[in-house]
Amino acid sequence: MSTSSHSKRAARIRLLLMDCDGVLTDGRIYLLDDGREMKSFSVRDGQGLVLWHRAGGLSGVLSGRASLALDARARELGIHFVRQNVDDKIATFESLLADTDLLAEEVAFIGDDLADVPLLQRVGFAIAVADACIEARRAAHYVTKAAGGHGAVRELIELLLRAQKKWRPLIAR
Image (cartoon, rainbow, N blue to C red; front, side, top):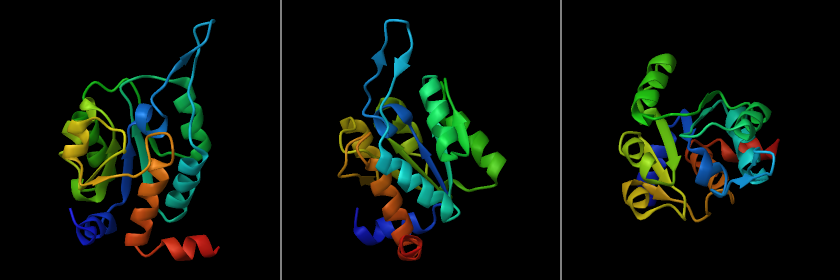
């Protein structure tokens, strides 16, 4: 897909939805001896989300798993919608559209694995991280240069904000 096509899609986006494991993290889950789990999140992705919110964008996470670490990170970053233990990402997506009065064309989704493919095929701007499975990359309008958990969300947010002519004013502050 051409860069101008990416820009046209990106210019319409008002809600950025993300998978967690493999997108906001590198997909690894550390299980501690006491049964708790640990994940690693990118500071660059976090800064990107702060800029996205400052520009008026909405954000959300749709995850097939539940995680206290995700709850904490989402609270810290002011992520608007956090849906965990999601079996059907399309049904959850449709519910979010109804709640926000947004159109599918106004939503971007960034994913990495097979469970993300149906939603990648439904949103206005579909993004796969660089290390996503081949099916997710094929379903995407754009594939990031960065891997999941290593700045892919930040890369996407910069693309969105540049297409919306909001990047330079934000970083000038």
